[in-house]
Structure formats: structure tokens, C-alpha cells
Image (cartoon, rainbow, N blue to C red):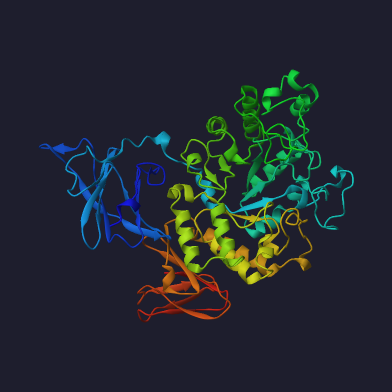
Length: 585
């Protein structure tokens, strides 16, 4: 038994409380090392005749990655407190694991045990429930639709008449979104994530000039208010992009510092190092990356903090938005985000707060800051398998198991899953224009745990390289759209709505990678009903023997709507090259 690999802590993704009073307990061990794991648990104050009263419950193995096995169980402490340890067995011995380490005898009292002192309801991670059932659509406003040519900026090009570059404009606006709500409804979209809409100098709008005003190129605040109303009437939520890490170069407060230097009343709004400020050869003030036109805001400054908190409150209070996506969230101090959450949730308790973080985000996901982060590990894993072909099916499964065990289950259910955005090449381009691979990717994303997001135009086969190539104008000529791909994604979205198990009910479990060399498969089950998703990752026909004894059960392929009965305990599913199947039983 490799003790060095065994790990548990009574917090975060290893021990966490759910809203129904359940306590989820996880343990990590070396891969293929332990045969069984049990939880020894009881109330810390439940003693009879000088003995601690406890019970034992087996953990199940929920997955294996390259190095570790992960074990899980759920208990419901009647008095919302728990003391516990673990019984660990391999082929040689049984030992016990507690907060004080390893011991040869079963713990007989609570002194050495792990403690979950009390399930305080205020500490429970509680993301908005509606997010789990939402399918998002990301819109880059300048490129989705030109609904009002009267607000076009000078030099606006004819829609789609040129390749996008960092400085050109095509006139996309809020009216253009309103005009195409029916299209989004047809696809099945129930949430829109907008990249920034506030007044800014660039076409991407991440260089804010005024956080309280819609960019005149997009319309005005009243136009946006009308958009929110129309979307809500059609069952669509709205999430805005909050760029609080940095402002734009033409932000009035920064312009004041440029003009007045050390005498500016706003000098402490930014991280300045010397005066006068210089943009070349390297800015002498902190910026986003080394971009001189995006000076970093000092969110520890009281005036800055209050200004940005009012921005957060204003768009919730006055426009009834449903979510904030927080740009470069990891570079803003935790104290600011804690106060931000409190302020916006006072106005709208079920507001969704989504952070843009590319690495392990557990410090932001303890219920006091964000509801979720953008699930870039999911993105990377998908692309590495289907587009870059840099990992095997085995590595894909192992990586996905790692992703699923990075955070608590109630965090995973609202994780923002995406396979493309305004910052990345188009998914079709990543897949070398192979629509079959794109279809497989969406089959996985739309049957996976989390809340999925489609980047505008990906559903009709728009291609494009890295920014600015990925920011083409939306194609509204249906004869130039890939309607087969559109219908494919539309059908998957509908299946997700029709069958909550294909979304966030139940548990997701991968079939071990050595079961079949060319296929990836996983179950979604709630203990009564199950779905089985099989994906053939190669361009050759295969037969996949189901790893279950389903004799006598009725099985339905929900993708083809075929039903059949398993007449024996050996059942095989035929898959075409880059094909997939979704079975219900």
C-alpha cells in the first residue's frame, strides 16, 4: 500500500456539504492499489458507556486518472456534524487513516478523526439552480447582426465583405441580436453570454471607456433594456462581461493620470511606478499582459472598489441581467470578489457569477466568490483528442476524470463548458474542416456535466483561425450555412432538455479505457435510469460490446429513436467511423 499517495482533507473537493444536508466525502489513493475503502463515522458527541458510537460505510471508486483512484460516499449527519476516518484494504493488509495519519487499529474515539464540525447553511456552495439546465450562446456583438445602420461607426464595412482584423468594423449591434431571437429559440438557446457591450475604443470592447454606458455603436442603454425584456419573454437569460481587472486607455480617469501625472487625483486608481507615464518601449504602469492600452485597475483602492461595485449593482438593478462573466478574474484580489458577490446577490440572489480562470480555481469556488469558472481543462482535453490528436483515448478519459474530481459535484454542475470562443480558433478549423469530428465534440459536450456554451456561428460551420480570424461576421444566408450541423446540435440540445440525466442529474462514470481501443464511453445514471454514451474516435466502423448484463431490459437509442430488447447478456452496438450512440435503459 503506497501511503504517500493517499490523501484527504475535510474541505473543498474532498469533503463538502450539499443543500439537502448530505455530506460528500472523497479520498484519493494510488491507482490500482486499494481493493476497498470504507468510511468510519459518527456524531462527535454520541457516546454510550464511554464508547464512541459509529458506523461503517463503503466508498465506491468513481474514476481513475493516470496516477490515482478516487473514492466517494455520501452521508447525512442527523445533527449536521461529523467525525470520521477511513478503513483501507489492499491484498496484504487493512489499515486506518485519520487526521493524525495511519494507524493499525480502528479508531475507538474521536480524538484522531477528521472533523466536519458543523454544516452551516451559509457556507454551503449554492449556485443558481437554473444554470444547470441552461445552454449558452456566446455573442461577439460587433459581428452577430447589424440591426440599425444609423449607429454604424465611421468606416463601417459591408457585412461580411472582408476578413476581420483588429481594427475593422461591420456594424454589429444590439438591434441585430433582437432581430435574431427567433433563430436562437429555434436552436434551443436559453442563455446569451455577451462579450463586453460598454463604451470602448476597440471593436472587441475589452478596453472600457465608460462602464455605465452601452457603446453607441451597439445602441444605447434603452436598447439594451429592450433586449433583456425580449430575451426574458422568450426564456433566455443574459450574462454580461465585466472587465474589472483593467480599464481602457481612454478611460477618463486614466487620461487624467496621463495628463496630470503625480498631481492627478486618480493616480492611485492604477498601479503606477513612475511619472510621467510611458507606453513605450514598455509601459511603466501595470497592464493586462504588457498591453499599454489596458491599464490595470487597483481594486484595493477604496474609490476604485466602490466604482466597480456600483457597476456590478447597476446592470443588475436597472436592467435585470442574470449573470456576470468576470474577465481575467484571477488577477483581481479575493477580497474584492467576496464583496462583489455580496453586493450583486443582495439585488438578485440567483445571479450567476462566472470567472475566467485557466488553472485550478478551487480558491474562488468555496461559495464566497464565484459560482463557476470557464472550464478550460475540458476544452483543452477535447481539442487535444479530436483536433490536435496529441492524446490517446486512455489519456482523454484519465484527464476527464481529473477534471471531474478537481471540484465538488455541485460546482461541476454549473461549470461553463466550451470548445471555442473569441480567443481561440474556430472548432471547425481546429478539426481540419472535418464536420464529423465537430459533431462528436458536441455529442460529448451536450451530454456532459456542466452548462454548455456554443460560440456564435460554430453551429452552422463558420471557420477561422486564432483572433481575429475567429471573429467573422455571422452568416445569415441559409444557403451558406451548414444546416445539417445546425440540426445535429439542435437535436442534441433538445435531448438534453428532454432527459435531465443527459444534463446534470445522476452520476457520470467513464468505462475504463482498456475496454475498447477506439471508443470512449460513459454512463449517466441516477440508480434507477441510465444513459450510455459511446463515441467512436476513429474513422473506421466498429462493434462495441456493451459492458453490462441487460438481458430482458428494453433499450432505446434516443438518437435514432429505435427500441429493442436485449435477448441475451451479450449485446453489441455497431458504430460508423466517427459515429456515436446514446442508449437509454
